[in-house]
Amino acid sequence: MKITLISPYSSLASLGVRSISASLKKAGHAVTMLFLTSSPFSRLSYSGELLDRITELCRDSGLIGISLMSGNFSQAERITSTLKSRLHAPVIWGGIHPTSRPEECLQVADIVCIGEGEGTIVELAARMETGADYGDVRNLWLTIEGKIRKNDLRPLIQDLDSLPFMDYDLDGHHIFTEGDLLVPMTKGILHERLALEHTLVPGTGVYQTIWTRGCPYHCSYCCNDIFHTLYKGQRIVRKRKASSIIDEIHKIKNEFDFISNVCFHDDSFFAVSTDDLKEFCDLYRKKIDMPFVCLGDPQLTSEEKLKLVVDAGLRSIQVGIESGSEKTIALYRRSHFNSRNMLKLAEIINKFMPRLSVHYDLIVDNPYETDEDLLETIRMLLNIPYPYNAQLFSLTFFPGTALHRKADADGLLGDEKEEAENYENYYGRIKPTYLNFALKLLSLNVSKSVVRFMIHPRMLAIFNRKWFGTLLFMPSKGAKRTFDAIRKIRKR
Image 1 (tube, one colour):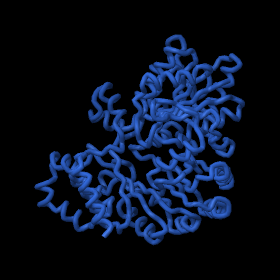
Image 2 (image 1 turned 30 degrees about the horizontal axis):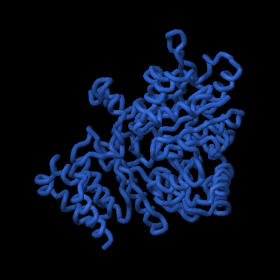
Image 3 (image 1 turned 120 degrees about the vertical axis):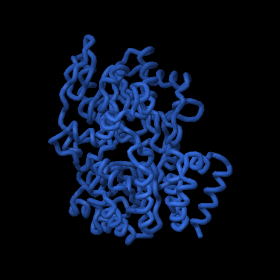
Image 4 (image 1 turned 45 degrees about the vertical axis):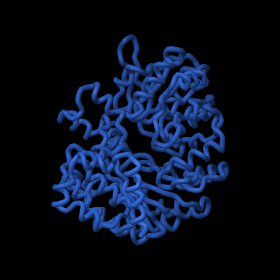
């Protein structure tokens, strides 16, 4: 049976979609994949011409699948409405938003897949191909005779090595290009796009993958909180054999000679034993031997583990600080990520510079935070030695998370229409405030004396105002000149 999978994400990585495609192909199905992104972190307008092309590529499909996060809801809704008005194939939605809001999604899609999708989609396709009833397939929610049928969950996949490597065959892959067209993916296009989209290793061919699945933490703002609730009592963090992930990367390295870096998207790369990490690093040096990046945290990133991976090729690590305020850390349920632990981790990371660079993630625009909370974050960063990059993300209340439930109870989300509009909020679009500007300066490694001067009480009394923050962030040639001047100061 022909199946079309649609990825509306900004990244070509689309790990879940590629894994599901590979599982379907392994089961003997023909899969077409559509990547609807024009450039990193962009949104398409979904013109009539593009929707016509999507319809054309889906025309012979027996099943159409769309993966989405909350920010992709309106895009998925428009695609689905168009396909359902023109074609007869059922449309199934999967991903974190359908998992957290299945009833809402069933108002648009024919079927919703909750949780991990590989086993579910393969069983669904097998039943559809033979004409068998699929109403009781686990993980599926669907409407039957006007009523929603909520099937039981299948357990989490514990043997990750049973899954095939992600689908990078290119056969049947199509990608958006300028002019609202979906054209067949080629090695040249893949090279061009991969060189653009990764912010930690810009300008290089980066292969993105994961060694483990699941996160050991359940931070209140994070979608992983949903999985901890959904799969309570099951082993959430699972890992592949070191030899398996190395074989996958080796295969990609041989097929695409432009791949020069690897990015591991594991929620916590160090959530494995030291022995596992030693085996991985030994194999990585022997068979891969290229720079890589990963995510770390102060609870699991020891100096011993960090030395292993730096010697094996780790060149950049991304660490979620999120906030330096103890009150906010408690709100985020990240007591193990307190300021003391963060400063200790920063001290360890700095021992490996300049071989290793670091990116610290921060959450801003939190309605529960006061200016004093944000100042605590700035003061903590002032205590971390340069060089580092600070990445700012605007707080998003993702449905299904503990923080979303709190915000809803506190009346911060508004009515259903306002909350639906909130799906469109992009977490990379921070508010133009004076204190956010101070954080931006730290990310540029501007002299800390400048930032200390900015947060002096007298300066705050004069300049910490909405209009001045807007002026600082104003998208004009003047603002660009300001940041260019700041970069020159940084280089001195």
